[in-house]
Length: 293
Ligand code: CA
Image (cartoon, rainbow, N blue to C red):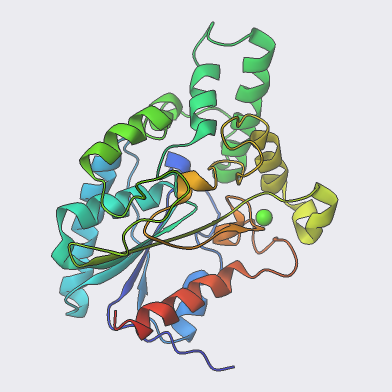
């Protein structure tokens, strides 16, 4: 079927990768930019440099938005942020609402990440029993290694986690509440200061053997391992972010059978059968188009 995602405003796909910028050979948003372009959208992927605060990353995003506006002649931008990218997008829209047509959070830790809370403790000596801390730190190092190709914890690991804990995102939310739900698990306002807000995300479902191609994705195994460290949303998380923590604006759906990396079609298209994370972006671009955005 011919898709029509010719949105009025260009789309910016903002990566998060949980605060880590060194992503080696992984193509961000695997196959997603191409699918959106095939459906007629203008798509850009800004690269935000390694800084730790959501505000600083948001400022960098604003500079990139200005460049795309100048380059395309468009009046506004549709911003889609994955993971921490959602927080940068929210910041940009809060500061410059006239330049942003919509903010869409994909697997965004909009109320913080319980995994970040736990890792933060594990990476500080004497906060957790030593064997627990060692296990968690090893899992985390493995995760970073798969993302970045570097086996060691980067220097900025703790600092980056600070930006994603429940506490620090709570402080961020006090300053930039646009689009957040008023009740835990609810939806937020669809339209704030002329900016439309949307979100979607997934959760881990069933056992690993049900996952099909994801069985062969080491990042999926790690998401399942991380999932054990959640308490508030123990049964409903994607390995890095809890279901309700991801809610922002109109919640398109927050229980797709997708882990945190599946929602950007990683690793390299290895996702559960029966759900197409790439098509979710094309559907959303069509949704934006139908809204005149
Ligand atoms: Ca996967």
